[in-house]
Length: 458
Ligand code: PMP
Image (cartoon, rainbow, N blue to C red):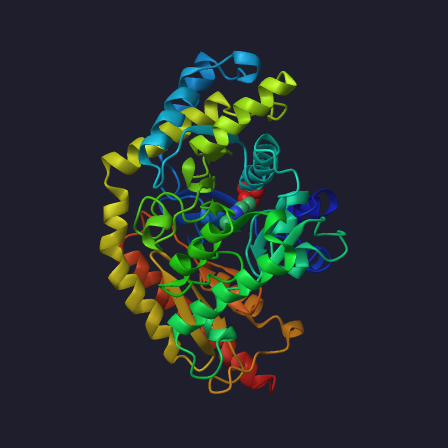
C-alpha cells in the first residue's frame, strides 16, 4: 500500500535507472534529511548512506560550510555566464585550483554540469583537435566493455553496458569497445594478473590495427571502473595499455568522475593506478555533490589546437548555459579547500586497511564470488557456486534482492550489472561507521542466502 507521497510520486515522476513497472507497486524510498554519513526517510528511519548518494557526497551530509558558500554566492551573484569573454571569480579560482592539483600537466579547464557532459565535451574536443591537426580521418574512440561514462548520446555510446544501448539505438558510429580488465571473470584458467594485462594490451593493439591507426583518435578509461561493477585492473595494466596508445598516437581520456578527489586515497585515481591520461573528466566529488558541476581538464596540445581551429572559425562553438555556474563553482572551491584543510585524502588512506580487511573478509561468505575494491570503493559479486563462479540467472536479480535486504537493515547500497553490490561511502566515514556498514551488509548477505536456500536457487 503506497503512502500518499509515494502515490503522488509514481503518478508524476519518471525515475532514472528504475524498473518503471515495479516502482509503481513498491513506491520509492523517500528520503528527507541527512547528517554525516546518515540519511533519514520521511518516517524518520536512519540509513547509513553506503554509496555516498551516487558515488558523490564525499563530505557527507549537513556540511554547513558548503551551505554557506552556496548562500553567500547566491546573494552576491547567483548567475552570470562565461560565454563571449565574460567571467567571474569562483570559476577562475576553481580552474586555477584544478590546474594546481591535476596529476598530469593541464593547461586549461572547461566546465560542465555533469560527468556525461564532461565526456561528451571530451569527444568533441578530440574531434576538434584532430581537425585542427589536419587529420580529419582520426576520429574513432575506443572505450571498454563495462566502462561507464554517462548517458547523453555520446557518453552512453562510450558506456560499455548493453542496458545503456538496447532500444536507444546506440552506440553511435565511430565508437568501439575493447575487453574489460576483469581478471576474476575474464582471465584464462591459471592466467596471472600480469599475463592477463599483457593480453588485454595485445587486444587493444589488435583492435587499433584492425580499425586502422589513422582512424583511431582516443581511448577512454576510468582508473577503476565504477558502475560496471567496481573492476580494479591489474597493477601493470595501464603502463601496458599506455605503451600501445603511444605507439599509435592515440589520445588518452581519463574519466575520473568517481575516482577524482580522494576516493582511492590519492587526489586522483590516476595516481593510484599508474595511469597517465592526456585529459581528465571530473564531476561528483568536485562539489561533494552539493551542486551539479563537472569539468574537462585539457592539456596544452589540445588547447593549442582549439586556438587554431576556433580562430579559423571565428569562435569556439561549444558551451553550456551553466558552464562554470558561479554557485556551483563557489561550492566546488570550498569543497577543495575543505579536502586540503582537513587532510581528507590522507585520512582516507588511514582508513583503507580497515576497509580492505572488512571487504576481503566478505569473500568467506557462501554467496560472494569476489569481494574486490580499492581505496574506499568496493563491490561484492554474488555467485550461485563459488568454485565454478556460476552466476545466478540475471532474471532473479539477486544483487537487487541483497540491496533490498540492506535497506531493511538500514544501509543504502546499489546493485549494478553482473550481480555486484557496490559500496562507496562518504570519505568522511568513521572507523566505527565502517564496521557498522560491513556488519549490516553481512546481515543482508545472510538474509539473501536464506532466501536463495528457501527458493532452491543454489
Ligand atoms: N563517468 C563515470 C565514471 C561515472 O561514474 C558517471 C556517473 N556515475 C558518469 C561519467 C556520468 O556522470 P553524470 O551522471 O553526472 O552525467
